[in-house]
Structures are given as C-alpha cells and as structure tokens.
Length: 111
Length: 116
Image (cartoon, rainbow over all chains, first blue to last red):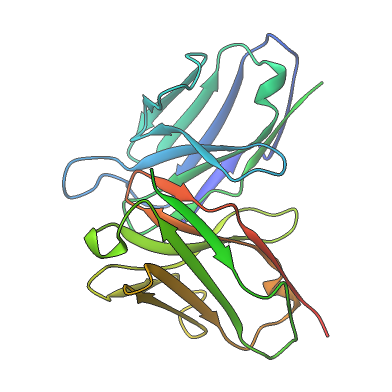
C-alpha cells in the first residue's frame, strides 16, 4: 500500500496570511505513463470534497489563484498565498498512481 | 454532467451486512471510468474501499478485501457495495464516486451507523 502522510494535521492561520500543507508518499508517485497523480481536495463542513489541484500543480476551473500545488516524486505541497475565511475546512492529498490513497487530512481554521 | 446518489439503510446491526447502491445519471457506467466507494468515519479522514471497472474487474483496499464486494448493474446504471461482518468501526459517511487517477466525482454521501 502507498501511505500518504500530511502535516500539519491542524493549521490555525491569520486571515490574509499564507498557509502551507505538506504531503509525503511512502513511494514515488510517478506513473509508468510519466504523469504524477497527486491531487488535492478541499472539504468544507457538511459537504462532499471537491478537487482543487490535479497532477501536482494544475488548478481546477473556478479555484482561486491563491491556491497552488508543487512537488515531485514523494514530496508535495499545497500553498494558500493569502488565507480567506472561505478557505476554512479540511484539505486532503490523494494519490491516484497506485490505486487510491488519501492523506489523513489537514484542518485549516482561522486564528 | 454525471450525478451520483447513494441509497441504503441508515442503520445496520453489528455482525450484519451493509448494503449500499449508487445510482448514476448523466453517464453510462458501461462506457468507462472506475466506479467506487470511499468512506469517512465521523471526525476522521477519507478511506478508499474499492472500485470496479466496466469490464467487471474489481480492486480493493487491502484493509477491506475480505469483507467488501463491489458490483455493477449496467441495466439499471448503478453499482453496489456489500460490506460484511460490520462493527461500530464501520460507522461512517459512505460516498460513491466516479474515479480516475486524477479525478473523483463524488456523491452526496450517506451516513451509515452500526449499532444494535
């Protein structure tokens, strides 16, 4: 199994300040087709998750440009350049290279 | 746009089998994609249970392999999950989903409680 490890698990942030979430995989996420299937999801309270970022750094349509993804191999990061109130929720990384595995989730809250 | 809707009992007794069905609209499940189940215990993270391909091939999280069965009903454009020998630890919101390596389309989720 591929284990996905996120940190931190809780992230209190001041409005307008940056935030960063780390996601590490137990093995390389480079697929045999050359793509790296590391995706980020946001889950607001009471809602189903929605995808923010796919294949490491591609932002979904409608996702604010304050969200960005980076990384390679086994080390990945989700950055929020300036946190807004609507960003409160849970954030999950998910790998799709070796079937599917999620990270434990990071709870973003406002200080 | 594909829509997925879970249905099934909200309460299951310990040691019994949890049956869930996912109705799909806006896309024929015979045409492609993986169709699967993901769960989220209260206050916890997401866990992929397993997936089925239109060929009928199934793939399971090793943690569920001995208890979970996922199947397709192409005539009704739906797929199902059966989880046997449930315990309180199986209490969770269960999501059905359409999956690729880079994408998950989610249902709304349905809460299943395991309790006597």
